[in-house]
Length: 459
Image 1 (tube, rainbow, N blue to C red):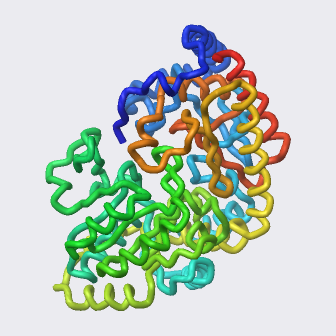
Image 2 (tube, one colour; image 1 turned 30 degrees about the vertical axis):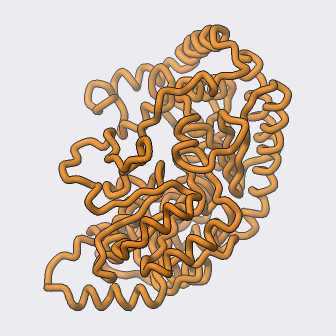
């Protein structure tokens, strides 16, 4: 999402001239520390667009791309031999640790037994049953990413309901499904101008309202033409925005009243617990999407449906003319992905794993709050299970507009680079941190000590 130019309100309590001098020193230190990464980055620029496999990899705020040698558990080791304590964890893709042993064993066992056949395996039934038990939705399908899973479930629902419109919340992110790239700009729905190569008008079929605004939601649903509401139970990608007390209970009632369906994108909020935010807080979505961590970091995603929606989806497929549905790819549900998901769901994403992670996240959140108080900064901390974030405002944002207004990429990158040079890595997008089953109390304390030192340099 394109954000406004950060106001100086995000920098209250900071000495910006000191901060700029600190940034210059940190950039120089990074260059000295990482000669092999610099060499590889120069080589990559010859043949890789933007010098990296995916242009998002330039978002770290480093002078050149850090190159990884290997990752295990809660640690990443770069090509210059530095071991970094990882609180980014692949931006949730490795939320249960890098290369978890059960997933590694499953992949090794499958490696000599075939990768893709476009046929089902025994793992598929196990995965389906595990998903149904965990999330309370009986029927499931697979995808290669949460982006695809979101795209596919929206297509199924449009086909099942005969309605065309999708409703999303301002500032949302559901992967790169094009339909969601609509924002409210000064209260007016606007197609996001950062969306490259878009040729048709998204405003024809996408409705956008602010999160936590029940009157706006009701007004948008009243026309009776919204097929589904696609939502994270907690907004995460514009900075975390929590639902206000009672919001989802009332919102679900409105969605049902107006004949629309609710899709819960739990790709990030699976940090809440084994059944995600929906199970922990009693939400009853008609469909649920989960990507990134469900295969332990192997590219795959899942989406589930209620029995009623599944029946309508099957009927829509049967009623359609022969031909490609526009849903799925040849590699969907491939043998490697199914083996990884089976291991992740049955042996990695366990209640015991969460029992380890959640107290550590509490330790991290509490520690950051103490640092903010000690440094007299008007910032806040938000936590959703194993996910923690600090934001440059004293009052947590209520919606996407408020969250977008306090994003300050320059300040974020300054802090992130300072942490990276001190052996700690957090997510490059805003100030998100995750703990995993291999994270220790000592790791959390290392992050807190590094953040304390960085803040001491810039206040």
